[in-house]
Length: 422
Image (cartoon, rainbow, N blue to C red):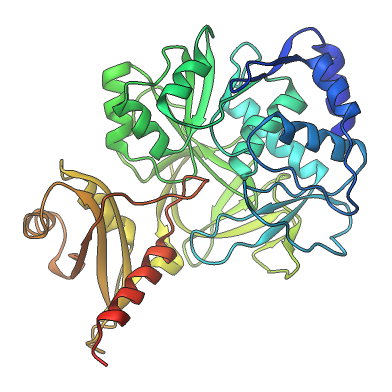
């Protein structure tokens, strides 16, 4: 199904540029890319594991599609998982982002992959005359659905940037009259500060992590460029998209449902996604949260006037003596301070059993703890003000632009253990 669609696209757009590699300067028309895919060998038995961020990823994928092989994209340096007895009719595995714990594999059919690509192209208005500038990982669900599948199933050209460094992005976009640029918030911030956002960007997209409303507003004010927030998940593809032309004032607003996606909220207050793009199952261990075209997320959400508002994650809520607070509530209040650049909040066990947990804040900020506490007390009750503060140079993100709350919590607990007597 997928290869037949690619063959059709290659015929229809044969003489148009399909792929440009900014690292080497090489270009392929759709006909040339089709021929290169036909010539590509893929010798190993079992699933194919396209890896990295180069044209070779595309060629390995095409060879796998041609040979009807199972595909599992990998990040650079990532070891292939052991895959045996995959679910019937499934052709593709994705890794979840593991922001809340251990990564899982998600199995998808060809129909589910194509449905996600169709939904994204129509909802976002991706255009053949606005090539995608590829700076995000093609192995991640976001990059695969926004860069790779639009190229191969819809004929949206792709320009591959070897790295998201400002000077590379500037160079990759040079001489392009109009481009679409999908990125993660950390990239948008770095490009803005380096004055490297290409003037040719016609459609700007941000996903993978929450996009701060102040960053969106700042870029709009300085460049007149609206960054469109996008919410998706490996388990179901696109969920919501902010198609508005003006910046959001509420960071909790993530947009309206993606076309052909039905959203609801369950009795726990969590977002439930139903669509033809929802993956078949987790693998090898199945869970009831992903089955039958339905994905039950752990995202606390509110659906209001056709829009989706995220209110935190069910498992991330912090229990302070029986009262619950979402980390996002505290993070939102902290980000309102002009000297807070980045922040992450999580709960950790309290030495006071009656208190249950304490709130920990990790920040990149110019202000000090005392000033920030006073600032928070203007908008938050005292019990929601962090007890522990850690000031760092950077909140490191992984290749997918994600900051792991679970990872920072684990690091904090390890430091606490090391500092305990005995």
